[in-house]
Length: 378
Image (cartoon, rainbow, N blue to C red):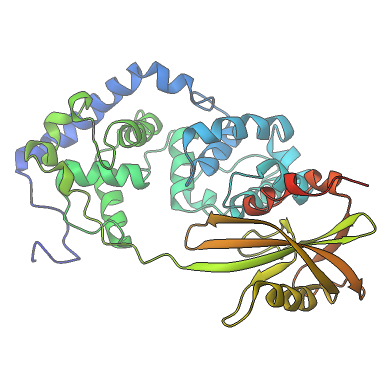
């Protein structure tokens, strides 16, 4: 098999002695280092937690989100929903409001749905087996692996971006880490390295190593506990790994929204439960089509989404926001209601709300930036 083949099993192959050294030394060195990282553990309130519910919440929040951001959200979440029963019984609007600002709202909706499944199908007891955990709404390989190993001490490896980077450098892995097959390759390799007695700590140690030491651009090799075992370090090639193909160009869309006033209240609409920002409230509007002015686009969008006719007033603000796969340039106008009865056409609900009451609703981050600019209640 060619070394450059996308299906290559490993590497610029390390010597057999290096493989043996990895198997017998990696876990030992990594766990000793992990045990010394008291400052790191203190900063993470979920570290040392035995309750699978708390571990589950932390692992879901940590997906695509930095530790420093998660800490306050984690604590606030447990204040509102201290156990799986309280989460299952909560209203989705309340769940989204507590999650508001953390992004990737599908995670919050899936937590809510999965909690209901745990209560209805498992008598409120968190399932313990990897294959069962993976059947819960929104739970994929990563979350199921983390829970199985950290909460239930099962030898199941966790593979996230940090772990992939560490693994790639340890073995000088030539496979593109954007290729899903590479993730499967890493998982199979780590399955042979994970210790049976401390699988959860091993997984967390690998993730910590990638996050704090084996960083993407400036790896701190001088403090790495597994430096001597690292193929990339020993060949002075840390900058060459991981191998990662270029991401596709991120498109930018021109968006316009309207703050529609009527009798001292403004109109908001709730997005459909599935899809991007599902279940959140927002101001009516949408994409500006080719050849349209922002004002004409807004009149059209409001008519299509609500059935209302409005008069476009002054521009309130312009802002930019980035999502995972695209960016938006958003223009917001103040509008006055002219005629029509508000009916949800592109949403699940419409409400006229006093500006002072808007903070009770969960909004996407771009819309949140508009709220402080609105005219106070009259």
